[in-house]
Length: 268
Image (cartoon, rainbow, N blue to C red; front, side, top):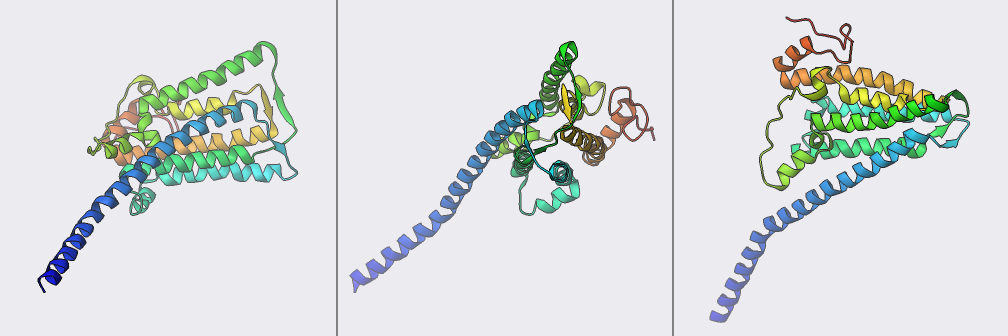
């Protein structure tokens, strides 16, 4: 009798210990997956940057009779979701499934996958719009390389860790609260509002050989960049309020662009 009672008590104790361990196991599993997601995202980011450099530099692709339609869809499938995911209302909806520490990673992965899809599936159109040689070729190639330097400088100014999701992810890894992101009017941001977008314009325009398919990509992404710049202004007004509105009254969206939707904002 006493042995039965002892055995039953022992089983209950073991069950209680097993139940108490479950939250710990879940927490360890969640953190393992979260850490792996962060590392994997940044490996993917590095791979994408590498392939994007050579894609925009060479634009070597397979020809196709349907190239113009394939390329049109590929150019749009990057541009449209990129801004949609950043819209405050859409981000709020998605936050029900993707928490703040991981939204930046999610956005980075979506951007990388979209770019890699464009790079790997792009089709060439064998028609040359312009072909530069000599000093003009060297000047444009220099402009292309400098645009990459400018892009990473601009990303560093705006917080590269926020662009890739690294900063909020690291705060989660370290069990630290995410510090409030302040607007830093430094570097090129003292002279124009969108140095990242301007740098990207250099990446798609500075090419010694402009083929028709490259021109299609350049045209669509140029339109997207200007629309995206306007949308970014609206997002920053939403998040930063009067601080950013006052900044818009002093600093144009692009150099010498003092009028229009991306010009200087009228003071209230």
